[in-house]
Amino acid sequence: MSWKGHLQLRYRRDGERTTAHDRHEGPLRVLQRLYPEGPDICHHVLVHPPGGIVGGDTLHIDAELQAGSHALITTPGATRFYKSAGEPAEQTLVARLAPESRLEWLPLETLAYRGCIAHNRMRFELAPGAEMIGWDVLALGLPAAGEAFDDPQAAHGSYTQEIELPGVWLERGTVRANDPLLLDSPLGWAGRRVLATMWFAAGSALPTAKRDALLQCARDVAQRNDAGPLSGATSPHAEVVIVRVLADRVEPAMGLLGATWAAWRQEAWGLTAPIPRIWRM
Image (cartoon, rainbow, N blue to C red; front, side):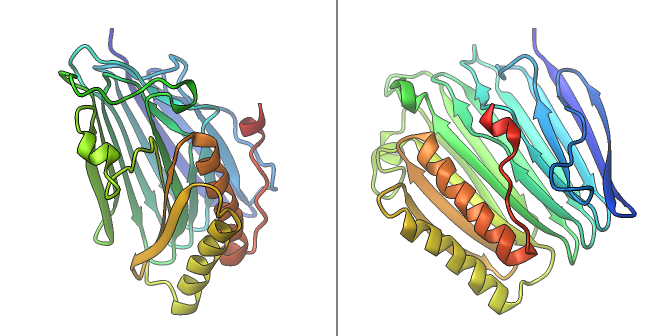
């Protein structure tokens, strides 16, 4: 049996508070609105009760942030794409940000099990004045347990990912289990099995000083973790700053992203970064 899930999230500013309305169909929903930082920022925890995504499952998230709203969306645990019998499993996110809104898209890691056929697509449409911080952490197989994703003899097994800021940045690629050249080459994954991507994006060009400060924040964090995962920070477009991380395990990558998130939050928005309690449970 395949699951079809659809979740609509609507955030709006009501005085000093960001309020939210959600509707769901199928096994995809959010927990109650949380305000650990006060009424200005609405925290939501996205849950998928079946616990994993298999071939034939389709999950779609549609988020809309009205002017002045601020939402932080995370998950209580890893997203798991399990082995497929032949059909792809799909998860899609489309987020639309009105002027002066802010989104923090901070899910925990995605695990791509051996034999999965997974498609994960994210599209973020930012109006002028809108800003966001987002990340994506992908682990191939189960690195901590020594369970491999790659298999030179695999008939199938692939993970396709797309991250799009229309007209600004498009990340699209497929990792195949039988492609050792990509997985092991120093020009590819270099034998590591965790890839993390993080970005700060705006709906209009970032002032040069702000963009340089965000880049420096990311590089300072990486320098303090020089014995940790490989990482680099770039700005391929005036509206986005990107951090890339390659690691052997999830935890060092998440640690680096968390520190960068805290630095960016303070630099760009003058906010501290309280760790969501769900991450510690």
